[in-house]
Each structure stands twice: as C-alpha cells, then as structure tokens.
Amino acid sequence: MAAVRPPLTNKGIIFELLQSDLSDLQVLQDLLAMAIEVEEEDKNLSRKVALKVRFRALDECENGDIRFYNLYNNALLYLAQAHMDFDAYLLYVEKDRDPEDRYYQPRRSKIYWLVAEMQRLLDDELDILSISMPPGTGKTTLGEFFISFVMGHYPNTPNLMSSHSGFMTRMFYDAVLNIITSNEYCWRDVFPDVVFESNNAKEETINLGRWQPFKTLTCRPIRGSLTGVTRCEGFLYVDDLVSGIEEALSLDRLDKLYGEYTTDLKSRKKKKAKEIHIATRWSVHDVIGRLERQYENNPRAKFIAVPDIDPKTGKSNFDYEFDVGFDEKYFADMEASMDDVSYRCLYKSDPIEREGILYHPTELRRYIGGLPGREPDSILAICDTKDTGTDYNFLGVFYQYGDSFYLEDVVFKNIDPGTLDELNSNMLVKHHVQQAQFESNKEGSRTAVKVAELVKAKGGNCHITRKFTTQNKETKIIVNSSWVKEHVVFKDFTEYEPKSDYGTMMSFLCSYTQLGKNRHDDAPDALAMFALYVQNLLGVKVKVGSRAELGF
Image (cartoon, rainbow, N blue to C red):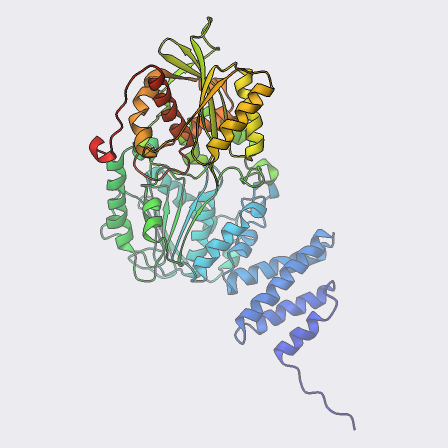
C-alpha cells in the first residue's frame, strides 16, 4: 500500500510553485495568492514572494505578453497595501496616467535609491531624513506622494508640513489633495476603506478617517500661526525653509529661522514622530546644516546631497526619460549663467558660509577683451605646487602694468606630477615669463628643479626661485587679500569656461570662507604667495601677525 503524502504547508506549496515554470501565468497567479495567504504566518516571506511575482510578471510584459499586465499591477497593489512598499505605490498610483505625464516611472532609474531611503523611514530604520537636490528635479513632488502614502496608511495620525512661504504650503496642499481625490490617480484603489472626512482650503488641512481636532495633514508656512491648530504624531515634513539668497547671506536671519524651526515646528513633534527635510541647500548655517552637525554620529539620521553631475561619470544625475529632466548641457548653461557660489549651493548641493566669503565675485577687479595694448612692465608667475590628496597645482601667469597685475593664464589641476611638470613648463615658455617663484615645501623643491630643466630644454628663459613658507596659511591668505583685491585683475567671467582651469580656480577662490572649513584653499593661498612675492620684489615690507592680533 502506497504511503499517503502528508498535506503541504503553505511554505511547501510556495516552494513547489517556485520550482514550476514561472513563465506560466497561472503559476504566478497562484504564487501571489500564496503570498497573501502566508502573510500573517511569515510576513517577510510574503513580501519576497510578492516581489518575485511583480518582477517576473514585468519581465513577461516587457517581452510582449500583455496577459501579465493585470497580475503585475495586482502585485504592486498588494505590496503597497500589505507591505507599505513606497516604490510599488509610486508605480501603481500613476498606472492610469499617460506614460509621458507620469512623475515616477521616467525618473525611477535615477531616484529609486532615494525612494529606498524614504522606505527606511517607513520601516522604522530612520527617524530623520534630509534630501538636498537642485531646483526643479522633482524633490517636492516626491514628498507630496510620500505624504499621501503615509496619510492613507495612518489616516488618524496628524502630520505637519511647513515651508518658507504660504505659496509653497498651498501648492503642497493642493498637490496632495489632488493625488487623494482626483480620478487621475489610483489612490482610492490603494486605500479603498479610508474615509475622506474633510478638507479646508483656507486652513490648508486634509482630514481622513474619523473627525479629529488635529487633522491628518496641516500645511503652514514657518511664520504662520501654529499655536493650538496642530500637533505632529506621524511626520514633520519640511520643504525649503530658506527663502533664497538674501536670507542665506544673513547669519542673523538664519539664527532666527532655526529658532522658529525649533519652537514652531520641532516642538509640535510627539515622541515617535519622524522628520523629513527636502530642500535646496543655501548655507551651512541653514536648518539642515545645523541638524547634520547635531546628529552627525546618529545612525537613525541620514543626510543626502545629490549634485547636478555625477563626479565619477561626468553624467547628469537628473537626465530622466521623456525629456522631463536636465542633461549636462542644461547644467553647463546654468553654471555659466550664475555666480560660482550660488551655483554650488543650488546645483551642487554644496552649501558654504557665504557671510564669510573672503573673495566675493563682485569685489574683484576684472578685464575683458584681452590685455592692455602695450608692452607689459614684466611677466611674472607663481606656483603653489600640488602636494598630496586633493591638493591642486596652481601656476598663475601675471602681466604687470604699473601697479596692476593681470592674471592671464593658469594651470590649475590635481593630476599626476609628471604631467603637471610638462604643463607648468609649457605655460612659462608660452607666455615668456621672466621670473617665477615656486613654493618649495615637500613636492615643490622637486617641481621647481624639474620645471626649470624643462623650460631650458624647450628654449625658454625664466629665472625660477624657490620659497619655503613657514607662515600660518590661513593668516597669510587673509592679510594679503586686500592687496590681491587692489592689485590683481582677473578675467571677466565671460572670458573663460566654468570647467576650464581658470574657471575652476575662480570657483575655488570665490568660495573660500574665513569662518569655517574650506575644502580647497589652493587658489587663495597661491594669490597670497604672489602678493608677498611682488611686495618683496618691490621692497615693500609686510608684517604678518597672528589671527588673534588681527581680531579673527
């Protein structure tokens, strides 16, 4: 008598189905049914099986078998509902929109990793998430979808949204309301049992589920009335608290803004409430910058900054499908149209301390259309050699006309020393430089000797001296900045490309701050060296004091 096979467990059934032909529609339908069946028993397994169905059904659709399309959407719907899968929700909620009108699908390949970080908030792996991206890249829209998703899952939990202006909060309110109520989106499919209780356009509130004094979503500008109207038990969502460059330039205004954030927004958070900041960065003293320092070593706080261009590939981080993003050409045009500091803050997500900028672009002397039409009094050069790491080689050629020194050309790179030797020597020969001074610290001594040999071999005639520097670099840069501003004449910004050596050098120069850390000080340091070099040549004695003596 044959042995009776014991009935299969749910896990056993799933295992057998996974060994079957997964290109069979019925097999995948059965797998999704089992994912639903096993949910209470093993939620992690349920999610893994549903994901397997989702992606296998998508593969079949992409291979031309549209029979799997409904199954694909059913898998997305189940993941969004039962497993609070934000990625699945974003795809499902827009499924009835025309492909070219969708927000997420054209951008998914570029921002899925960002959605995954937002998922960590939902999975209680993070308490604070900050996302900084360039203007117009869709960060606010992503936040609108996120809040609409949270509201559906927790309709009776109050959330608070704030921004720098009532115009911004009203746009956010309108967008979230549209996602929830419009037939354009499938929000109602995801949350069929959630009651839309009320909304108030004047108060910018939306309430789901039961009536409650503190609504599911309240939108208020940072300086709006918040007393008694809301509390935050779910998410505090903050979008662009800094209004713009004028506010970012004032440390007093940023101090006041942070105080308003802590007393008017953060104080509304209850114990388990989470916080998400989505903003363009303007200053290291903005709210995000201060939070980043406060939570620097906290594993439950994540601060993300996404620049315009991927530094590894040189490609745009926001070149989406259907031409809804920005390519490298767009960013290059914007960079050429803006001052260096603003571009770095807005598009590089690289805030700096603007109020302490030593060389503001508007303070510098400029020339356009070439050098003066007469013989220069002398042609000089200074070289701050590349040391290690991210140091840059700065070799600048200056044409002297009276007491003005026109910075006509530079070698400003951080490549290998051998190539730099060739470029430096070529520059000296090209401009018929008569005298040059090289820093002799570490790499500088070798460089000076090698470049002198190359200049001679190439037919040039340049007297190269070496100078060992013992002065405090920061003090040297600051005390010589006045001389540089008075005597050095820089090319007009229309005379060089932003990514050229000259353009990169100017960007670094105009972002040097007296009040905080500087990623690169090679440009202001070399100009300070040049100031001392010229003054020594002219017999002017310069006293370099300490920062304390100078009041810094």
